[in-house]
Image (cartoon, rainbow, N blue to C red; front, side, top):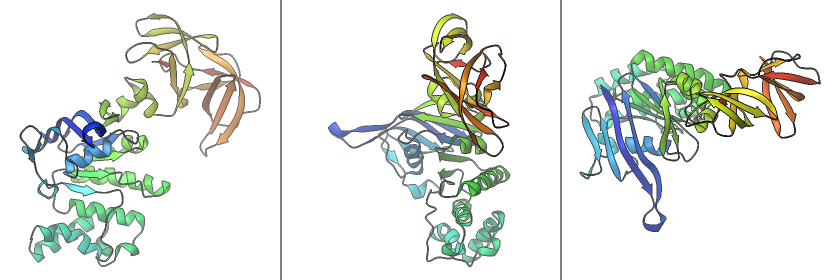
Length: 352
């Protein structure tokens, strides 16, 4: 059963001649126990969609259902306010009350719902212990680390057991090292508690690590959706392919095509590639990690001089360039100056 259903949602900012359409007929669903990431560049509509579901933005058309309950219907003029939608919200800024203790921050929503003191204490203590915060109930937000503040914000969203939890860039305020740890914690927590979560992020690594399914938004519409693996390995458009990985993009000239097998030239060299999406255009793309660097000639490869190498810890990222053609590739060791053959497997050299 779907915990959340959005159908043909339209939302504009402004009015009259200054109307700016933000969501252009977005439809999506979230099943029980599923984590869906809304991914996309700035301005694609992902945060607006989350806020519309939460009741913090007013769409102009479409429907939103939470479980079996309709909370927005443009045609019928129905729009339940945010507080009646019973959703858990975790904001980018955490939005903790600075003058309230951890316990009181988490208890706030329960007090608004007029629960008894004993029940509030039981629920708050339970959720704090689930998130490893049991010993911090008396502290204030300024006495906590960024990671602890983030967990308090999650505890506050979970304490009244909402059917869906909405996360708006929940890890963006953390430093890089803490983000990786928090990513693992958040995924483990969501799975362990069987939560249904809708999460906004602009970080494709974060989306792939945490979610079961990704919705990639582009200019107010869903460009593609699917499992993290399918989005990364079988993109249906150039936009998806470029957004979902670290890539080399090469100007290509198509010579011939047989099904999805493409003959093309790159920098004057005849190559084989695979057509993806609508058809073979003039752009070839390959994931950086798929390129094999060799000192000797290989099948389906081009020869380029090495420009520079950068140390990344577990590998070197090397840049090869001649004229307008440049390629990045990974190597286990620093490469000596000179020219190298860069092998691109035909099934991994995508033509859009």
